[in-house]
Image (tube, rainbow, N blue to C red):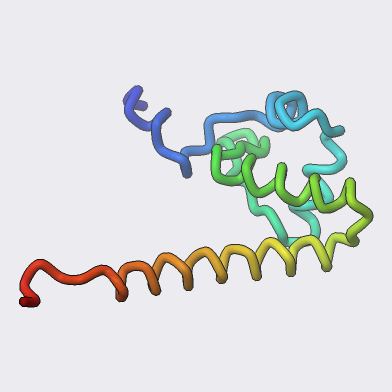
Length: 103
């Protein structure tokens, strides 16, 4: 493994115990996200869950919504819609930016 992989948001460098500690949740919370198919951590050679920074960010967003009283389905839908809106806004901004080749 090169140290450069640690800068990759998708590199699964964090164990379940570390992830639970960072997110201040029980490991069961992370297992429930995996079982529901909302968060799919990679597995080590020994079968242990490994999380990337991007997955930790998603889990944190879901946790915030749970804390506000949302169900898992509602939280996953809200996060998905937020991501779609962010993508659409970025695309609109790109389209509205004048190109250098235009007079």
